[in-house]
Every structure is written in structure tokens, then in C-alpha cells.
Image 1 (cartoon, helix red, strand yellow):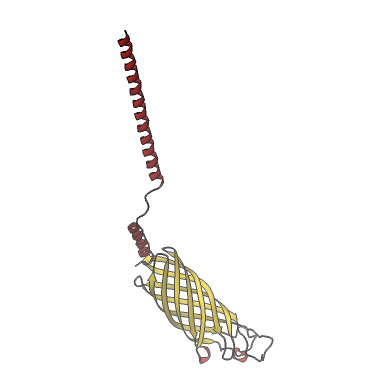
Image 2 (tube, rainbow, N blue to C red; image 1 turned 30 degrees about the vertical axis):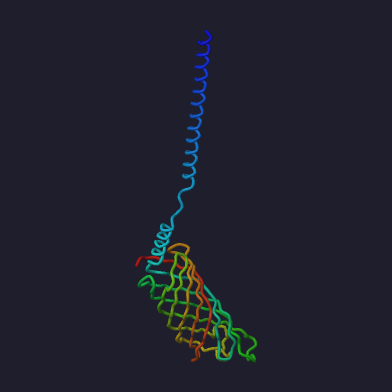
Length: 242
């Protein structure tokens, strides 16, 4: 009888041990499964980062798209420091500027350019006509030339341009019936003009950019050369394909 009880007790203990082992094994499997699910969810929540090669390829595609446009149209304004007469001080002028570039290839373009500047001349001293010490003057330039883009990246481009054409000076409009030469200012007229500049472009999109151009403008009013310095700034819109 004692052996039967011992055998029964032994089987009960073995059953309990087997049950505990099975429970522990099931718990371990559940934990492993939960851990795998969490890791998978984390990977899905955080996609694989872009590789250097794919990033460089994407940037190159953007560069190619940006500088493959056939046309660029620029519009904006600026500032010009202008010499208004043979014996007058330079005066400050506000400018507007517009241009169209036709690209023969991604670097070389033909330009058509038009600008206008407006300011108040400083009458030469001593003042012969004190009632009009600072008459208004206007100049317009119409030029053509070439541009060469010597640096181009995804966001930034640099180019140099040289232009030549004519300048139209209206210097007697604010002289109240007097000639501009009586005030010591250049005579009205159309004379040769030329310009040199370097443009910096910041690209918002492949077809839209902001341009800043420090510029030199040479004019020939009065038979002498005026060396005028300023800048233009504005927006570029690109379209067409080469």
C-alpha cells in the first residue's frame, strides 16, 4: 500500500514538473515572438536611411534637371551709383532690371538685357540755380551679350556676363525748362554702354531661383566714360529643355 502511494505521489510530482516546464517554454516563446514583433514595428516606423550612393544620384538628377532648361527669364530691381556730370558728385539711383537668357548648352548663354535707373543729380557747386539743386535724372540701357556659368551645384550657381549696347540718358526732365548742361549735368542723348557682372543664383526649385548680381555699368554720356557700380537682385524663372 505504501508503494502505491509513493508511486502515485511520484507521478503527481512528475506531472507538476512537466506542466511547469511547458508553461515556462510557452512563456519564453511568447516573449521571443513579442520581441520580434516590436523590432519589426520599429523597423517599419524608421525606414532604412538613404545611402550615400542613392543620395549622390538624386542630387545629380536635380542638377541635371535644373541646368538643362533652355530659357531663363529674370526680373527685379537694384541700385546704381551714377556720375551725373563732369563736375558733379556721384548720386544714388534706384533701378529696375530684366533679362532673358537663351542657353546653347548648360554653361553658355546668349543674353538680352534692359535696365532703367532713376535718381536726383547733385548740381555742381556753387549753385547757379538754387531753386533746383537736385533735378531728377533717368537712364536706360539696352544691351546684349553672353553669360558663362562656371559653377553649378544643386542649390547654388555662379556665372559671369559681359554685355554691350546703348544707353539713353534723360537728364533735362527735372531741370524746369533749363538745359541739363546749364546745371552741370550730361546732355540728353543715346550713347554706347557696356556692363560686366557676376551672378549668384540660389535655387528654390529646378525652375525657380533667386539671383543677386553685383554689376559694373560703363556709359559714355557727354563724350566721357562714366564708371558706375551697383547691383541687381530678383527672381529667375526657367523653362524649356535643351
